[in-house]
Length: 112
Length: 113
Image (cartoon, rainbow over all chains, first blue to last red; front, side, top):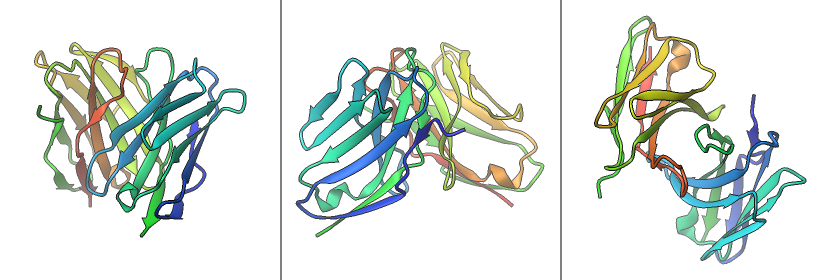
């Protein structure tokens, strides 16, 4: 059962514009959320995380927003760059961080 | 520092065979998790090992098993392979807390024919 859902399999944006990737979860016990970025033929790499005590975490061009009441989080990339083109996975875990659930991923294409 | 190393990178097996995949974590990381990635299901959790003990297990049949050695290296074994086992198998290592996320290996692509 998909406890973490990324309903958009793909997203295309113009270079310099904002990319918004969305993620929904169903398990209210999740309290730690992460975004991973994956290039073809490589394993995912950690991008940014947020714990449930926060509603926003920012790291350079990347910002993650968490709406606990809606069980929704989003990743904003601004400005988007062609090198950001990759698959982005949303992940969530409970308080022991040991059993992480991943979304299916969203393929982001940033056009020059 | 060296990343997470998974071997082999590619593997082709026939149905009914068994396979063993290896994962060497980042030095100092004691937790190793295994994931299966398929186009339709995304990343699915298989199991996690910490200090040679399986700490968590996902919803996979008993044909999927693993172990961890004293140097934190981990192996995953799949017996009686089925066509549906074809996937990219990823392992990830982390410090015990998992804080800061996991470091993934490049994966082993298993094809069952």
